[in-house]
Image 1 (cartoon, helix red, strand yellow):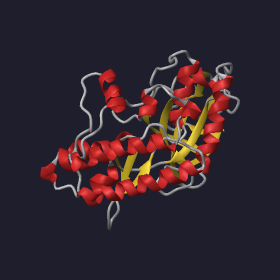
Image 2 (cartoon, rainbow, N blue to C red; image 1 turned 180 degrees about the vertical axis):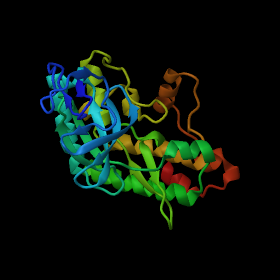
Image 3 (spheres, rainbow, N blue to C red; image 1 turned 90 degrees about the vertical axis):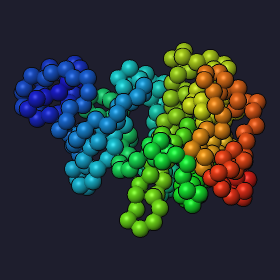
Length: 290
């Protein structure tokens, strides 16, 4: 990718001169602050980076709203098979319109040839951060958050969309002036892409697990992927998240990933009201979780 220092526009690598003002272009590896993508998304900050994509905060110049842009990395953007899956997953995620799931607004290809998804920008802390700071959460808050996540998962599963990576990191809590926070799920459609891309790149083989070991379902723990995984896998992971919220602890303790995976396959978790009796967790809530 190359960028013009004067107008901030970006172009593919085979450009040498900016078509707008004739200035020489300079090679960049990341989108620069101030760059305007597709004539409407002005890049404001780089929010993070993963194995598949880089995420930016952007301002929609036409609508005067903020967005999060998830930009696919160049090595994947040049893979036609990946791009086909990326488009299909983005279209599926776009169909999910629910107040407790981060909204996908747009799918496009930037001037430099990199595909990106424009999403609702949510401002709040992750459930992971809250648990790390507070430990066990009040039962009423746990039920509010769980209700929000269940409602979003129900809508997604009816569309045939399975998240595959429900965990506190992927749940954002948005504070409300009067009442409990609103919980939103991040990254619908992305986890399946990550799973399938790893397989195409030769990073996985039959029986290899993909996911977050502490929260993965037994099906994921045995290496099942793709259409072998359905909505029940998300519900199992949500059960682990609820356990963590109620008790401040995971249902299983392990020092190694393999040991954690074996727990999901073979160990029955102890009911949270018995695991932490000093917290006075209602038995009815404990039974729902189990």
